[in-house]
Amino acid sequence: MSIDWFTFTAQILNFLVLVWLLSHFLYKPVLNAMAEREKKIAAEHEAATAAQNEAKSELARYQQQTEDLSHAREELLAEAGKEIQIWKEQHLAQARKEIDQEKTDWFRALHRERESFLREARLRMAAHMHQMSHRILKELADSDLQQQTISVFMNRIRQIDETHKQEFLAKLETSDPQMLVESAFELTKPERKDITDLIHDYLSREVTIRFRENHELICGIDLHLAGYKISWNLQESLEELEEEFVRSLNDVISTDSEPGINPKA
Image 1 (cartoon, helix red, strand yellow):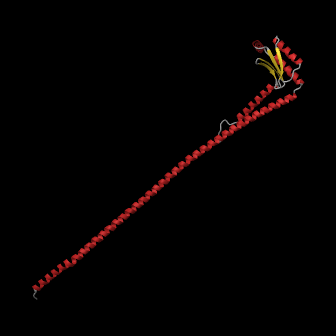
Image 2 (tube, rainbow, N blue to C red; image 1 turned 90 degrees about the vertical axis):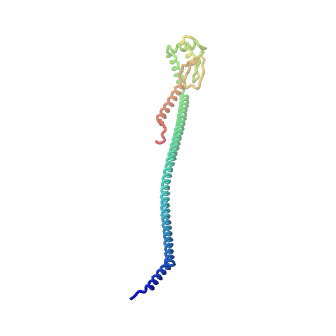
Image 3 (cartoon, rainbow, N blue to C red; image 1 turned 180 degrees about the vertical axis):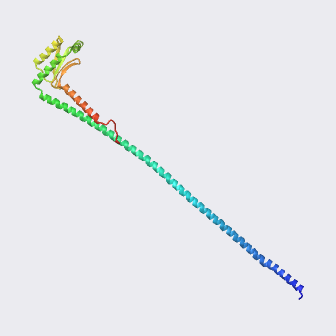
């Protein structure tokens, strides 16, 4: 069998021409289209990947912001709680202080009112006792009591010691030698004479003696000379009793009163 080289060569040439034509007009556009398609797909994939990464970044940023806001909220709430607690403690302390001060002021005012009331009560009681004693003794006074009063007064003059006698005489030398004898009742002439004679005998000299009735005295007689006085009367005894009564009440009140005000007690 012989080979037709011409035909073989022509077929090879036809095949090469066909390959070139297919490669130039079919495969190359297809390959280019496929390459463009791959580039487009790669670009879209990259864009999708970038978008996904950006979305992840946004999600992470959002989560971080959410956590930051949560921490900030907790810190703000904690700080607000502390400030509220501090404000509460400060205002409670101030309120307690004001209440304690008001209680202290109230107790002090009450203490002052109590003291004022007790002081007024004891003065009224003392005055009432004095008035009652004055009235009762006046009602009980009679001639026998008056005679006894004169006798006691004269005994007081007789019992004056030498020192007081010299003071008495010195008063006579440095002042108008005029004496005043006051009595709670009217003295009779014999009674005045007895008193006058006693004074003259006691002083070993005569002096002018003026007699006067004084209803403020209670069953008593006073002798006055330039500020010097010899007396015996129940008025002074009542005054001493009144002073002693007031002192006793003061002692009782002072003992009963608290030494310090403690409203919290």
